[in-house]
Amino acid sequence: MLGDVLGGDGIFVDLTIGVDTGHYDSVVVASGGDLLGPLTDLAEDCAQRVESYEQRLDELLGVPDFLRAMPELAGVELDAA
Image 1 (cartoon, rainbow, N blue to C red):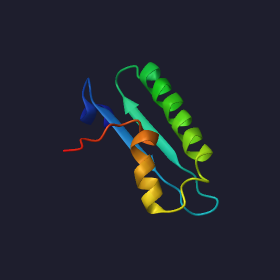
Image 2 (cartoon, rainbow, N blue to C red):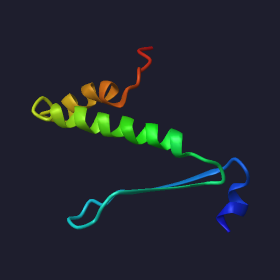
Image 3 (spheres, one colour):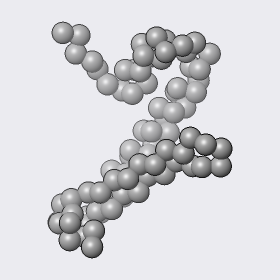
Image 4 (cartoon, rainbow, N blue to C red):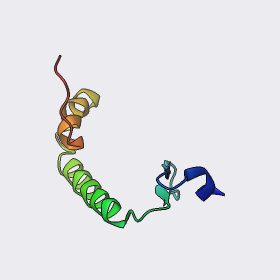
């Protein structure tokens, strides 16, 4: 069983991306502990980042534009070194 594999502090995450019409994305998370708080925060952050991305679609005319915007959209700071 999955619980036996995960142990007390393990987390299993399955991410499915549906790229064809009629197929949908999903995230499955299994854990022995309560992850409701962290997962709720993560879902809210994800929704905000998707909204920010969608608001900038007119500016992202190609891959170079997207790559330049990605750190800000993802909320990460890249090491310039």
